[in-house]
Length: 112
Image (cartoon, rainbow, N blue to C red; front, top):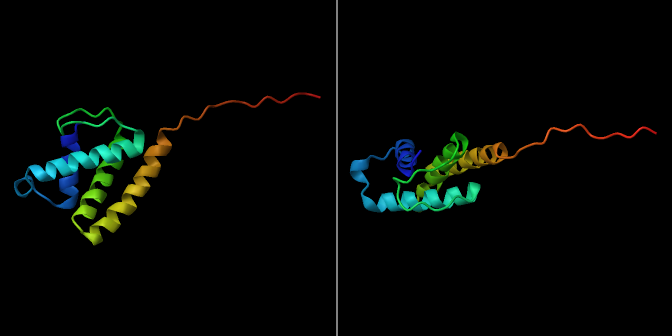
């Protein structure tokens, strides 16, 4: 998955089209991907939306909604921001919990 894949999903969710966006929007999405990726997993910054992201589907899904949250906040779209903030927080919790490895052990019980 690339940053551009994230951008396409964000634009679809927000109802934006590539025709109306321009370079400023791409930079905005790139910055948001970097911010949310770092928040979730400490992801290294990408330099372009064409860069490959080595992330699983849960993380990618959370990044998409996090980017939507940031974009709607910067564009002062309060109604959408409330929605995307709520969804991002749920996706973030789910994505973070899926990265935790639980060691399966049987506790030692002494006889005595």
